[in-house]
Length: 551
Ligand code: ATP
Ligand code: MG
Image (cartoon, rainbow, N blue to C red; front, side, top):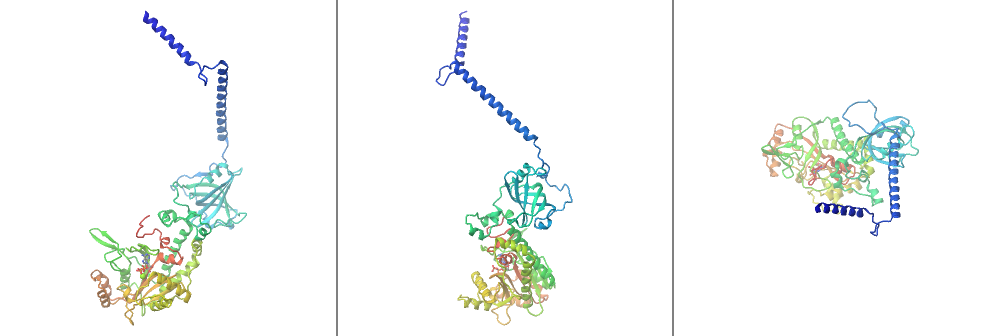
């Protein structure tokens, strides 16, 4: 019984304690008065009503937004992934072809968004770029077709995305100075992103497109280091100047081909995996070739001569050349494109030398005429004057070059090769004296030329060999080659070269071969010096040098 009484009492104590704990205490720790409690209740009520009102307003806003019709739906957005689902037959206009002449016409354009700039919420300016051409496009909110949402979408497109637009060509109030198309702009009606930028760009194309002059005017502008540009070469190729440089590179090949085909030459393709180092052993890349070794061709020399022995008359080749030289200079690559040629002649190697000289003039003149736009684009970023040259190429002899240099106070050995600084100085002296940036130096000392070079019949210290120079730097080496097997063997022996790997080559001459001469041109060097650029890496698509084999 007593236990039951105890339990009842303790329950009562618990209840009272609970009641005491339920009493609301004020800040001073004492129970609140009735009045204070009332005030608190009112405050709570007010807060509750405020929360309800905010929720209601948010709901109303959402409902309003949902009911506001976007009149541009279907005219903009991200396009479906192109999996070649259909051909609509639309006629596409290239940015470079847009002009005042198309005023009022509706055009379809695919281009990159170079920049997108909103002015307020009702207007957006886009600069669209296709290769080297740019045009301004405009979206403006109106009550019929262009919604605020569409303008907002346009202004949020990241630079370098590719879009597809339908637009009307209009005449701008003032010429658009910042675009290559200045006399027309586009009023956008439809705008779809067909390829998105999904990664941070390695640098800004604007920064990579500036000329030295702009940096001089404003030294605070961001510079992009050459190595950063080459690391991001895939992106770097998009700059207008780079686009144009490689158009010009292709043009040099096209004109080389054009000229030589007109001369009756045959284009050949010689092997690049070879068993003999064609120009001597030192600067050759060795490769493993199944269970033995082979080399990468340092030049097509032996093979183009074999074609002469094979009665092709005149041959040329445009192909890679590999040089394992640890040359870290502005004009050496470990892989470059060689423009090579070899021609049989009747009487004198000058027949070939003169033809090559005329060929270069043909290339230069046609570049200025037919690739004027590309040259202009390159010169905008890398200003230079076209090289100077006359109606006929200037021909100097090596002895004359030495005399010119000695007159200028340089110490030059009569039979020594010219160093790069001496070559450059010679270029300046020749320009002053003869007013040309393009010239040929003939009759090099025999001792500094390869074993297959024909000696000069009048002075055995010299040879029937030549280099061509553009703005004071070598673009081609060539010579009459020894087609007489006995003389060839004599030279090989005199130079202490192992004849064994050359037996196949010599055999071509033992079966009789016409006299012939030719040369090897470095494509990247021609483009570099023609454009007055300071580094060969600018004219090589994906340059290879001793420290770079990627990307
Ligand atoms: P250089 O003296 O400038 O090193 P080279 O006399 O050794 O050149 P050649 O064997 O005469 O070169 O090659 C013919 C042409 O090929 C040169 O006139 C040049 O235009 C080009 N060329 C040679 N080596 C390179 C290289 N490493 N990178 C780019 N072009 C080259
Ligand atoms: Mg040379």
